[in-house]
Amino acid sequence: MISARRMQDFSALRLSSNFSAIQVTTAALKTLIALIPVSMLLFGSLLLFFKSKTAPSFLQLLGAVCFLVVVFIHIFEAFRVFPYMNWGRDNSIGHYVDFWSAVLGLVLFPVGYLLHSLTMCRF
Image (cartoon, rainbow, N blue to C red; front, side):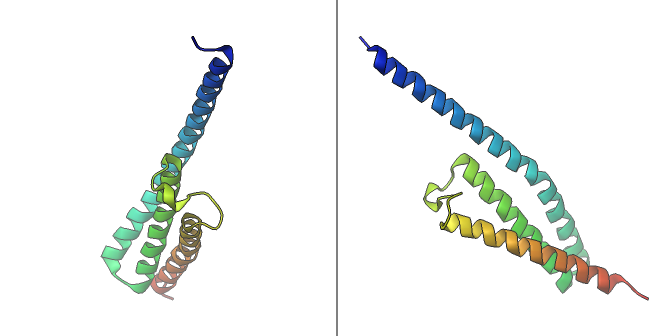
């Protein structure tokens, strides 16, 4: 027969596992929603690159790919893919890949867009 103490332990375990499932679901939902605009940026950048094949369009494409890497890292974190990367923890390889992908995306995409706009503008 199972004691009352063991039943409390099982119910606490079940509640904590449900809570983590809710957290995983919301994190996964947020990242999957973020995948929509990032995919649109990537698709637009690919079209621009195949149309003009210039350095600014390549920078813009590279920035969009960096944003896609950030979204995939957050998807991996939500679904606990590659746990040895320690996603979401400070001073881990996953943290640095996420951080530098975001920084490169925030620098390369606007610079590529600005340079493309300046080269297309004819006075």
